[in-house]
Image 1 (cartoon, each protein chain N blue to C red):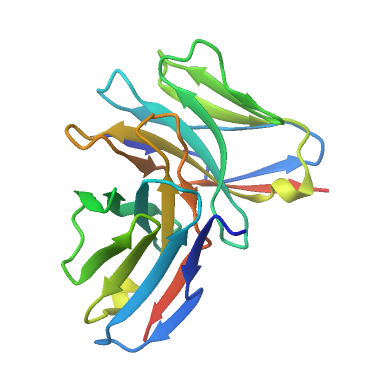
Image 2 (spheres, rainbow over the protein chains, first blue to last red):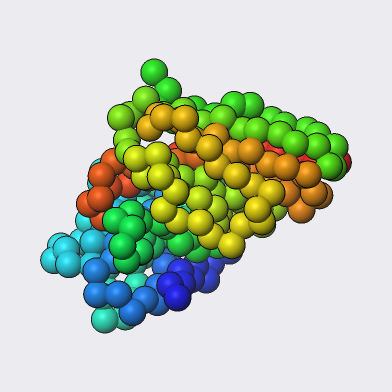
Length: 118
Length: 114
C-alpha cells in the first residue's frame, strides 16, 4: 500500500523568506507521480506542481520547486519569497496506477499548515 | 467559466435523510472523482469514473452511490445519512491516462448531519 507522510503539522515563515515543506513517500511501484496541492482557508484545492518518478530534473513552477530525492523517497516543496497569500494547508499526494483500470487515484498526506508572518 | 463546480456549497440535514451532491466539469475531462475530507483535513478517495464507468470503488458504505449521467457530470447520492458522514466532499476531474495530468478540484460541499 502506498503511504505519504508529512511530518510537519504546522510551520511559520517570515514574509519574503523561503520555506521547505517535507514529504516522504512509500511505494513499491517503479512508476509513480507526486503532486502538491494548496488549500487556503476558503477551502478549494489548488494544484501547484507535479514530479514524475522518471523525471531527471526537479520540477519548478514559478516560486514553487520540488526537491525530489528518489533514493530517500522524499519530495519536498520549496516555496521561495513567501507571500502572505501563501498561508494555507499544503498537501503532498501520490498517484498510483491501478492495474487494468487505466486511471489513477491520489493518496494524500495529512497536510502541513503554513503561516506566513509579515 | 468555473472549471469544476459543485452544488450545493453547504448542506445541513438530519440523520436518516437522503441527499445528493452534484458535480459538473466543463474541462472536457474524461475521469471524475469524489473525495471526502474529514474534520482533521484528511482527504480520501471515494470513487472515480472514467468515461461513465466506475473503475475504482474504495471501501465506502453502499449508502453512497455515484451516478454519472454523462461525461461532464458525476453526482453523489447518500442514503440514510449518519453523523459520521459530516465532512467536506470534493469532486475532481482529470484528462486522459497520462500520470502527469493533475486532478482539478471543485470548491467542495460542506455536509453537516445533525
